[in-house]
Amino acid sequence: MSAAVPHSSTTLARPRPARPVGPRLAPAPRATPVKLGTRYLGFLSACAVIIGLAFKSELLAPNQVWAATAGLVAFTTAGLMFLHARNRTPVWFSLDYYACPALAVIAASSFSMLASDWRLHAAAMGAMGVTIYMSSYVDLCRGIGRVRPLHRFLRDSSIFLALLALFFLVLQSELPNAIKFIWIFTVSLLSGYRSFRLVTQREGRALFSAFVTAQMVTALAFGMVTYLNQGSAYVAVVLAFAWYANQGFILHALDDSLTRRVFFEYGLFAVICVYLVALALLTR
Image (spheres, helix red, strand yellow):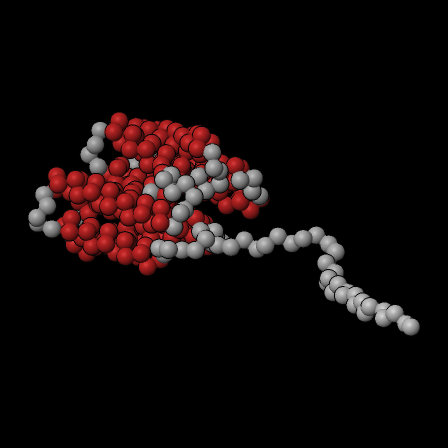
């Protein structure tokens, strides 16, 4: 009599695929999705231009233009704050996002008060809109992680144009010299803070660097206005070149990128500035 042998089945585990040997690659960084982009920025710039064109209307007296300018600065700043807050831009409440547009609005409004031709007024407001768009476009791309080499040129050109225009308008005005120097110091400080915040996240370091640059530009303005007999346009160009050269050296020193090419570029502006000052001394 034979006993039945129970049938036993063994289930073999499926072999797992071998893992690749080597360092694990980190996932590629993803850009932050944009909720409000260039269309909103273009709309905001166009609205600022349209509002600014009304400053030449007969409904506004010359002394009311300054109140309208303050309102336009508030409108532009509020629109840009909404843009950066909606896109969750890092440190969206920082002053450097709104310094250049505010300076552009003040420069365009001041120029419109001096210009008698409406075409010059329209050109000033158009330049204001372009400056607001370029400056804020760079900030928008920087906040969402889409930085391009052209952005540095757009940033520098926008702040330089606003700075040069304000220097000329302040020197051209009939304000007392003390008030002119205060304006020059404030404009240089805000512009320098805007530039230095792009390379350092420390508020103290950016403010100190901007203060050093503004102090140098104001001292140069004091010397040229007090002792040299030159026109407002001449002095404004010298001050703008001096600001650009000084902030360029400090900016690249903070960023640890002060190469020979960069030194030659900003050194050329410094040499031109020294030449213009020497020429003014010889022809006074």
